[in-house]
Length: 185
Image (tube, rainbow, N blue to C red; front, top):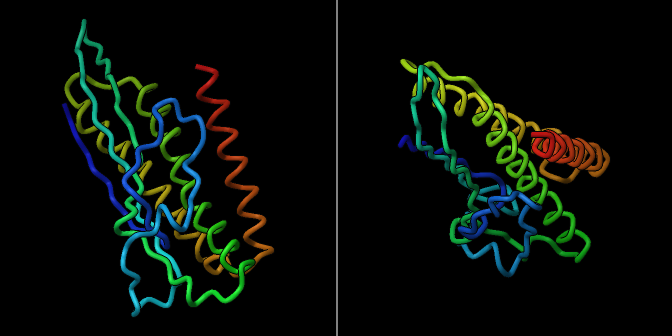
């Protein structure tokens, strides 16, 4: 069984809670539940979300064909996630910040569904399947890591409401596409 742990921190940190394996809906953030970490006072940002994607698989080789049984999950680390609510003066500002951070979680949710679909539905070489799976997982991780960075940069960490609304639509559409692709298997 091959394990790969890919970790990256975002602008908000959340508790270690795996998403359901059926991938029904992404975890919904709550300041009181998901942000237990000590804020980084040197950070210019008001919140940080830490999430981890983990996958593992068992493999069976039968007549020159590799089949994998995949376990795939996202966790939100509430003890590394923090928020500086004292810096956000209005309730509307707090809601906007939480909404932006929810976007990070929703992007990870898309990663989860896409990784499941892509990793399970490939043909792998008997000789190289471990390397092929690891390479494919790294490509998926890199793609979504770039998406997370673009989301922050383009929305100016949620402060550009027009671009935030554009990204909300992008993320929603990607979630719907991934759900449809998963349901068509």
